[in-house]
Length: 265
Image 1 (cartoon, rainbow, N blue to C red):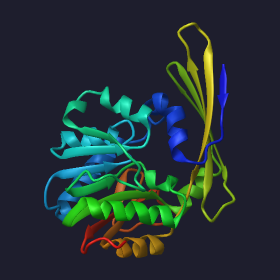
Image 2: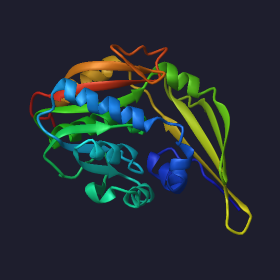
Image 3: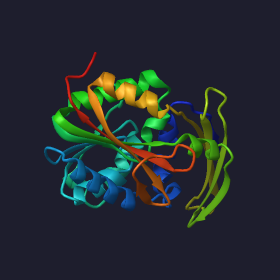
Image 4: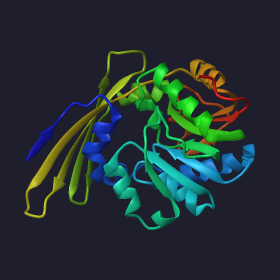
């Protein structure tokens, strides 16, 4: 049994892989990232604990932040990912809402807005990223914090060379990257999952999504246009938070900004 689709938008990609997402991403260090985010929120002085987690997926970030004392609302575009989140322990403490980060419904107000796991990399260029920034600004109280992560240029370039086989219980996952050809540091990632069925057969599914890149200078300009001031752009390297992101070496940048003015547009 095989399903094979090439999906540019992120929503059909995660719709296709939503039920297997936690298996596919089990090596990603969400528990470390949650701790880093909580420390950054405390360090940069959020005005309260009401938190909106954008692109929350299966709830790894939202539930982790809830356990750290935040009142969390998680938003994601994929019904399958949200269903997985709602089935987890502690989900009753989090409000999970289906929504598009490019056109957020009014869910606030909030003291903190976060993304974790680089969901913004799936937005197709500056216009969509700017729309997400404006939505975050609308959701925040004045002085509220915006903490989000983006892959570095170097990471996206390395991702384009990936060919990795990952074996898990009842699953085999093949990761393959390739240059997208649509802009600098932009990569197509294809994931083949082979999942064991109850009848002994294996089901294969293939999904492809594009990882886009917007450089740090343009990110700062888009933040400013949305009513934010950039506080810091940390680097993450081998699980360690560093004072400044190295766009070649580091895995990702974690950006902290605060709302200074009413959103533009």
